[in-house]
Length: 301
Figure 1: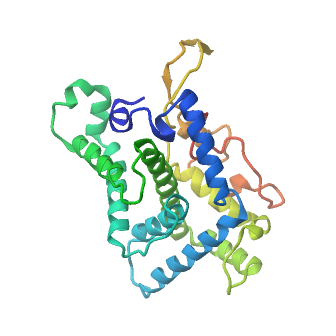
Figure 2: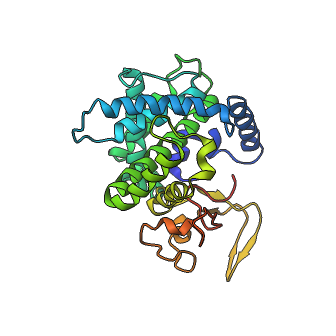
């Protein structure tokens, strides 16, 4: 595990744990979330409700230019909050905004040069002041918030794992989606035409409409592919000695997959460096799945 990440969470949570502990935590998390509707249509009302609040917030801007990232973070985080905390929050809620601010800042700092130097020279960076010190304090502030009843550290870290993984990836994907719809108005127009034709203008799309909207589905997948928001996979470890080509990799070696190499593979994608929804459409215009579509993760814990 990367030294900075281990310094913060140890071997706790869903991301950092391994072996028996990880299996038990993963099984508990999945069974609990499924009881709350994960992977089922019972989740859809929560998403639809949040879409309504998001639409109202955008409408309140009255056509003025604004930065959508905060609104997207609020909306996506609230869907996760329904699972993790049992309720949604008003966009003006101070505690909610502090939580989002701390998470966004911690994620940003973890990608900075000081954090990378810490991973290379942890023994030295522990003695040097800098932004990497703030990462630990931000995560500690999140872990120390026991007012919601999450006073067991492992439960708290699992909660953070679910919250961060669910909010940051989805809101960033939506941000990329807005960018590409602005850049390619002709694609935006085709998506809008399909929505109007299948759904109509007076109601929100639902999961039952998905099979009748192949072009919109293809655009969403292409946004995830070219957005490449998670280029380096979460670190893994080999469970046994293995051989990859000419390289011998001993058991217990830390490895990480480059998802970028798959999502931009010229032998798999017709125009890998261009935004092209056709990557996910067959000759008849029907949606087609791609084995090399790996936008978020690869392998198991």
